[in-house]
Image (tube, rainbow, N blue to C red):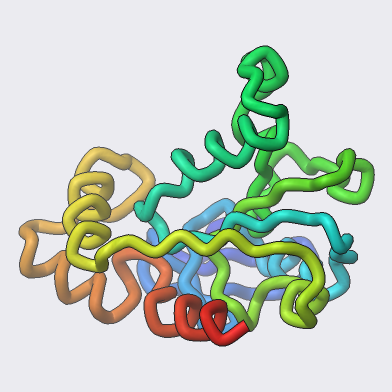
Amino acid sequence: MGTIVNYSIIISTGQIMEPVNKFLYKHKGCYFVEGVSPESIDSLESFEIQDDDIFIITYPKSGTIWTQNIVSLILHEGHRDGTENTTLIDRAPWLECNIFHIDFSTRPSPRLFTSHLPYYLVPKGLQNKRGKIIYVFRNPKDVLVSTYHFTKVTPVRETPKDFDTFLEWFLSGKGKKNLIMTCFPSFCLR
């Protein structure tokens, strides 16, 4: 992916994600964890949306996996045998973190995708009302508590010393991507 140099990630294209700390990087006004590159975010600008594409857009810890499984079963007509031997990331890959380098253009229709990206970073075709969006919103207080406990057991994230510290991170957008204000209103106005 890149090389860590003084907590900066330098990508092969020479783009630099602005380091916030050793766990978070900022690109185009949004916070990302290591593994999401500026290349993958920038490539979405030219991503071709099909009219029958389905996008599950969620704030982190709001029911993403639950929704991915439900929609996947609906697309396979409720038959689990259509999905049981396929991993969830293959059934509903992440737009911003294509870790298996899936060629999205070869996926069969209707294509199902997942994202935590804010509205201004999703592909332009989606902003122009192509495709379908399933937006899942959860009570922010529940998201806060769920994210706090998730962060405490996730080794790739900084562990907060206490809940008050985590609350400060969360409200500043540094505990997880700051999507409550950037994602929710924009998708609701679509």
